[in-house]
Length: 460
Image (cartoon, rainbow, N blue to C red; front, side, top):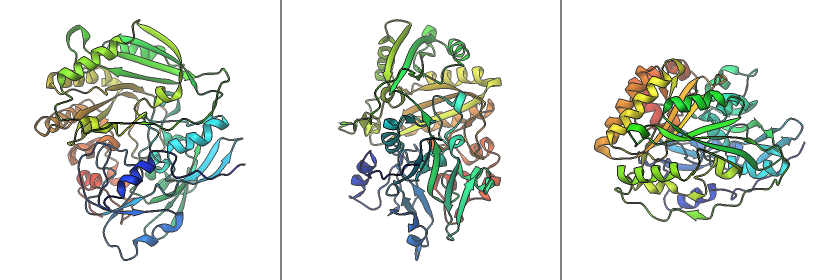
């Protein structure tokens, strides 16, 4: 068994920390909406909580990198317990692949340690700048959900500290109810101090990649059905085009290369989005032009390449602060999953509604979820189709569209992803997650979030 310490300045966490020096009240989600003030309290050591809360009576919430899109990582007027200082690697067993680390370590830091040793994350989202605790709290998913399930499926154990000072070891056998409530529990069951994750072996940084152009949801479904043996699949879809180009896209699939190759840490990103883009920059015309160019940049219907894992998994991470592209008002993300019985019909209807609205999303991601069950009580994925869309906020148009899309999702038996949400109503959330009252029994009474207060009607 090996142990080690990872530096706290190895990823974008240092950028976040540097920005926080200007004001103790500023903490933005990645969508930059809504904008709330809160007191930032850094946690540097596992024993800091709940000691730092002595004499503090406001509600609190543990947060990491703030990469959730809406208000699940915000608490208006409360205390944000920032965990990124707790980023130490505690233990690693190369025989089993089980890594133990403090909850504030980022996936980027884990990769810097694990890739040179021939290991990779079992599940990864589209950014590596999220903390281990955040990955568990939002039960993140990735391109391999159809074979690997959610991140929580690969977490053997973690420790939870409640506001009364109680330490709870959580696993499938130790306190299994709290284990299930915490995975996908949005950070509301306690402050996670450390966690384990079971990594998977690799022999190269490379991905055997194939990109396939498709036209329409039916072609996407055909490609999905034909790719069951491939570990990673995801699609970019053009949600602005209509007529013969409606729902055209590129189906992207890949596996870890089995040819031994270079294993080294990734270089630090050097590009930073330099300005706040003006609100009019992203409009139907500009996004339509981008979508046309993106679709046709692949000259042939099929393209095969040996690709580094960075552009395959994290194409946007190479540009820091890319959310500035959406301007000062920020962005909304809408992500649903609709079960297979209505997945085709629902996806066509929702893409049609988006195209009709005139609001444009150039980050539109379409994927199939598999039937690997999550251990989390409140986890988002279930078998079916998921679609994620990013929109610049235009107050008079964006929110009415999101309400319509959420209602349509409900009609098709689907649900929305809390980690991506800033707009769903309490009625919609409670319909999507009827188990929310059961979950509420496990919430720490001193912990809450602006999201939870919005969708549950409860305060700490």
